[in-house]
Amino acid sequence: MKKANVNKSGKSTRARKVTERARLISGASPNVATVEELVTANRILYAQSVLDGYGHVSARHDTKAHRFWMSRSMAPGLVTPGDIMEFDLDGEPVDARGRGTYAERFIHSEIYRRRPDVNAIVHSHSPAVIPFGVTNVPLRPIFHMSGFLGTGVPVFEIREVAGDTDMLVRNPALGAALALRLDDKPAALMRGHGSVTVGISLPQAVFRAVYLEVNARLQSEAMKLGSINFLTSEEARLASAMSDMHLSRPWTLWKYEVTRRNPA
Ligand code: MN
Image (cartoon, rainbow, N blue to C red; front, side):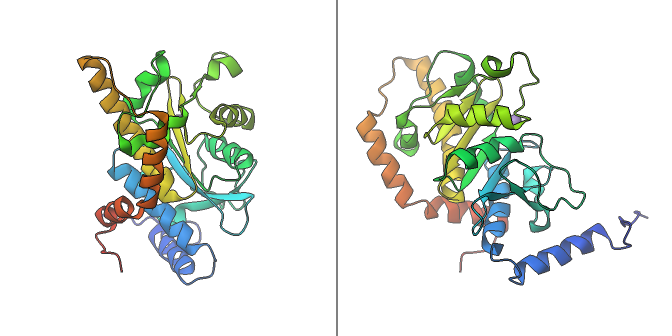
């Protein structure tokens, strides 16, 4: 028979999670909706093959702008409300309760520190983006869904900042250097590693993470066929504004796919 997973308090891990979930849903916290949305974002990004066992997504705290929410260290596709932890802008957990943290939480803390306009961040290793971080070919908007790339996509070169490393943004100084390279843009590539996308909301940051990957795939395909007629900067601006007006459409679909619950 399977051994019950019981912790020191004698309560099973499952029961603890259920209690935590009930506390969150009961309205004990004003941030319940954001925590629920962040769980959904984790599930969506896994379902959309943007995140796999690695990568993470965060949301700025609703009532404390100097705090943000992110999962404990685990695969994003398995995140539940009880896994969501609160962090300060030094990347330190406010109430860890023994839960492990992502080594690269400083990506999030330092971008929130530098970008008051940003309320959600995705860090991904999605594969089609990687070639554009390691060559001199810039990622550019190839179709209207990726108009947000029209302002340029900076590449963060960790070697310039720290020499040879394990490539991870594992301290505040590296996070600050990445945030500086991102500047005021919606996305940045990380050479030999992955990417980061930001947004004013979880649906916008998730949309951008999904279409960053799609754009990279399409651009690589088109490059094999010949020279590419990209969107002009004005087309990109107009298309991006259009997409932002309809973020709830893909978000509702993606949410349905991971919850199997129709929107109310
Ligand atoms: Mn990473």
